[in-house]
Length: 415
Image 1 (spheres, rainbow, N blue to C red):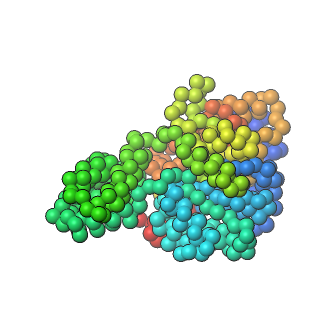
Image 2: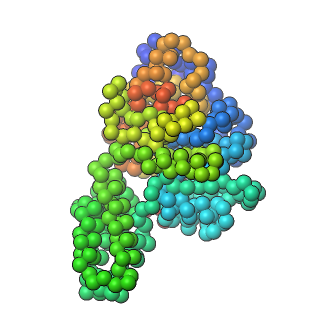
């Protein structure tokens, strides 16, 4: 048993959790390798019969959690007919990723330059290259990619607006550009992350966006005016619906689930959905029986629609370097600490494995799992978790990695 988890001894001794984990946990030979996937055989067989699999990570910053997720995805593609990858990104970005893996248009680095920042990594680029190679070998049965978020503003939208101003209203260009210049930085570093890092200019970006729109609307209409106005409205919506604009992460993700459901309905494809565990969890978040949490993730809607044909996997870790911070061993009340009592570099456990009554009570009871975002502060580690009212209803399988190392940022995402 790992010394860092000794404070969980009482719970483990009472429920026999350690013995249950030892009996049903299956080791993962390598968290990031182009291997045969034989160490994942029982897991992928379990997931292979599903229609949609949510592969959720507890953090976007771990090379190992991403590596396990990608390895599972590869086996599902090659062995179980999965033909679509849903990612947490906008439809516009998803279309560029899809064009690359289908036709080879562009290259991974260029198509990821406009993607959501947490996906701009060398690991994601390698995943795209693998999908492209697979599609070249299977031209009549390709793997597709799509973003679950609606179309949203990108840096090019600012350029359209500013170009219009310079050509048709140069006397107003500087005033409107003054509102747009600081807020377009959110496409490089999210506004809420800027606040966490102490680099935010101060004024809420949504206010600047709305002021730019108000000034723009006073301009004389031209044949190109409406087009530029559409791009500016997209910019306003982007900042109003951001984490900073909404004042938090909580929101209803029904539209994202509908996107996945529609893709399956239209194509018949089996789909792997990559996101954070709060989004892939098969029930709404919260740890009380009243379930008053306002956050209902995509996975909860997918479970409601597909039933048991939606499988939910949570990929977490014990401790290690995330690049932007070093995460200490988890607090004893977290599931990650309990999993850490198994002395393996990495393993997975099917929560539906046979269990004693005491273990079953733990599985069906409320639980907290470590989650680390871009605003993580090790000094506030106690707040870095996701709570669910029932572990087994939120997740079908848990993957635990002992120690993590950071993802490798692509150059355009490194700042």
